[in-house]
Length: 199
Length: 210
Image (cartoon, rainbow over all chains, first blue to last red; front, side, top):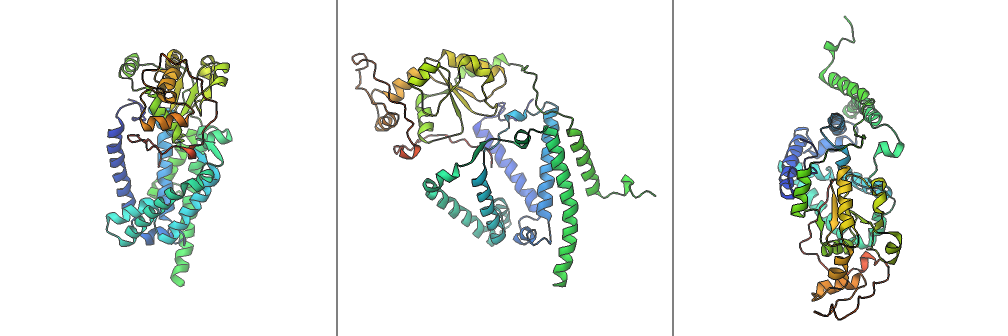
């Protein structure tokens, strides 16, 4: 049996929605258990007092990265069939900044606001309403920003392709980066948590 | 007592060390099979041919082009002269002989067309044989595109709008044999913004990613 299951026709469009739902529930559950249903916990990362978001996300990235790499090395997953969303460099940088500002101001990111709603947090409900308002405004304004939206297209490019590196070397680099990040995060947390107590 | 004894590490440190070890080993691995040898499941292919799930109807493709969708690649398999004379908007030309070396990614949705459909069908097998999964054929090829999209008979208002969008014109019903082959429209790619108000009703939108 080979993966990705959907691309190999193990299930169709309708069943894929059920699978996506199950994965989404699991994703949300673990976000909630990591404390990401709380805006206080989430924004603490921007004040450098609690970098749990960074640590959880990078742990997930490293786990998925190593898992996918080894599964495809063993021939279980065909990586060339995995969807890679195309890069539009400048629009995505701008979009990322807008999302980041929204994250700091609103205390959630889109996914975690839904996690917050699941435990009945009102601020998360307000945030989610804001998402829908934003999506609506974006949709209505799309004809005016379509040109920018499609600018600087680079196609579905990955880091190994872009820098002509061995795939495994990029895997190693990301793992090293994550571990240095974890060590650094622990230090930063100690410094800023102490400072927050004094202040 | 050695400070570096593994037994004294915290759980996080052990996990980190395991990740680092796996990461270092990864440098020597290659996740992509590049031998060029692919196993073909002939029964699976036969089932696909039988159920025609690998076909895209001309009307469906027309909707995609009108909507300016970019989640697929449209490949024209005819020769250069035929391509220069007329090709579908957004189509790229890849002669069938060069198809195995044409830069296509295996995770892309690829729609092939030729004049009738034989070359497209052969191209479909060619690409399936080298491991492409998302290969589709324009049903009936360019001939069907002319009959169903550019110069449809008994056209609905929507079909008329689509036909006009691509520079064609509906034919009178039953007049197909009376009129000479209509002139192919000039090759201008209509801007997606100028699209007629066609709200493709049962269009299945497929989008992956988050």
